[in-house]
Length: 367
Image (cartoon, rainbow, N blue to C red):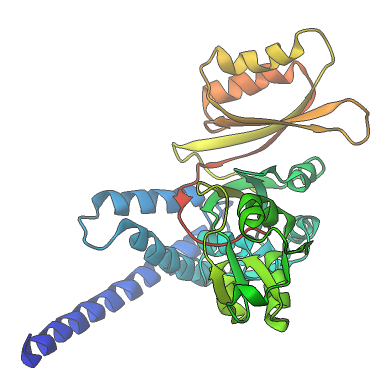
């Protein structure tokens, strides 16, 4: 290609970039007006259903060649910057940085939000309950290792709502300072990644001791300080702690996802494709387990998940957690929950929120 042709193409790109910049500023001005229109009203400035609709509309009409995944990432940051102009957003998450919970927070809120790492799940709940953060991000289950019981237990006493969910794919890497496997004398990570890589470790590193630590980020930091230590962590942790990838994608299950909850104070509006979560305790009587599901079965309501947890204050009594497809404002969903309530000692609606898109992002759990 002639230099003059290359120059013309670059000039075209510059002209297009200028138009994009002008349009971004036009959008920003409208976003500021939206924020002013919400002032004094009860409307939330963060609306997950609105964001979901934007992504679906744009990817649905995208003719290419710009890929849909990139469209979503670009508009994630545009929306994040716009929300920050409406109101600076503070989001607490189960830290530290470079854990998968951190990546879920970035995926949901973008880089313009103020993301605050905290040391425990109760600390995230408290930060939101006390109004020091607008929202919180906590892990709730992994497709391989099951539920994060501590998160479910927090909803027993908390009045916070589930307002969104994030589903991200997990891929674990073996990292070390040198990148040479023969120098590794110990492997460290959070218990869940160790469990999710059990078969690979038994096959390839059977003689190497394994050590549990508080998080994959803590493991990566240890590896950065001692070249005989390897960490199971994410590519993001490798970058942050200047580590080499000894072996990538060592998880036993390649179809491995972690689900995260966004917690806040107000249930979002119906998006048309929602999930509702409830918790309840049923009366101890014959046939009760069948009857607690009947209100949903006869209305043909899809149950996405059911989980039980022991009530800590009472031996051999259980709390049930139920995820169902639909919004609490849907008449059939509302009627089913009201019917179930008649069989319960107590029932609590934990929130209705848009069903998550699966994101093929590479990271690790702080889970």
